[in-house]
Image (cartoon, rainbow, N blue to C red):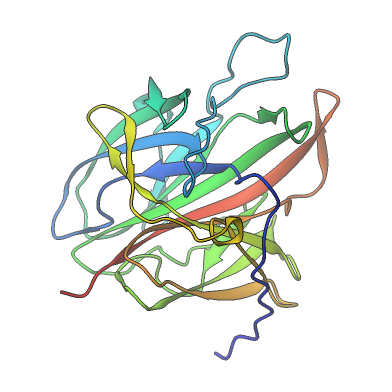
Length: 270
């Protein structure tokens, strides 16, 4: 299928943007095993700030827990909310409240993970953000669920496999809100510029240095059907965030922006 693209690469102002991370070291496994995940809200490229998941507006001291966390395999949904354990994740400049989890994968095929955190209050923007985030882990190379549409309030549906990606290949997706394509959706893309220390829950040293601010967050726009393609120039993890695509809502007398995030892992050809 020929995909029409409208791509705009530009600067994003002075600040990097928030991405809900759902990280595991490897998305292409040869056989079943117990995988570990880290869930935290970060600036993937700059590591400028680690946010507290579930942080509410000032004056409300408690943090709200994750609303949903589940796995889908061959269309069967498994609730994983009880696997989440609170952690403190150390970024370059500050510690943020997040979670760890582990889950035993047994069967061949795709295991589609989805996390819907509680809304997070962004002091900078003066609104709440809720980023519904997806990651796909595959066992033994058999494809099953990677392109499954879930009808989420905000969702990036892969049009190409979101795993088994060689450096220099591309990733394509379609942005939808409650099952409806979002024309000309704005998508922000960031490279996870540090390794993740799974044992100590912290970011490692930066891998690359951006020559200018606009390289840290890449902006593209989907076409009129909500479709996009992006070429992945470097091995590692890449996050795609479809901004403000959920149907407009209010939350605690503030605007609530519902966004879709998907993470893909790129491997180097050796």
